[in-house]
Length: 189
Image (cartoon, rainbow, N blue to C red; front, side, top):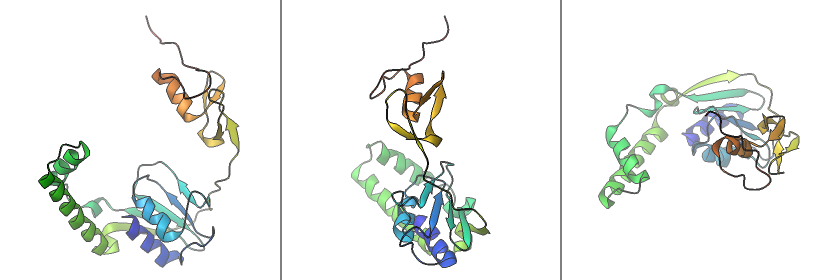
């Protein structure tokens, strides 16, 4: 899916990024992003790969002409119960060698189908007009672990500014990796 999205983007907005002239905004954290990084040259390190955790197979590429490529509902094809069963067995490490082999074969068939499918059956491709997102933000020190955290990731708890990990730990009962615990007392009787 990422290979095909990158192909669409590069065909629409132009060649691979050698510096930061192309920005990719990805709305998923799945393996498709690996292909987008490789083929477009957009990386987190250069600040021209932006992750927005929307859980969607949608990717926006920004240059002179901006394009949003989002998977169509039919792109994945009909649900295949055999694939799902095999996937769950492999994921749980309980698949037999024959089941693993069948899973690999089914995955290869699906990959070939995606790589050869006409783009208009796979993605909705639209020209959009967006400002290139800025990815350089201030860091705020987490009041629990003391680690600098991007300001957009800070959470507030009882007047404390916490990184997401410490904020989550405050509600889960797990001690933070470092720094003092700001764990809330359990509520109720």
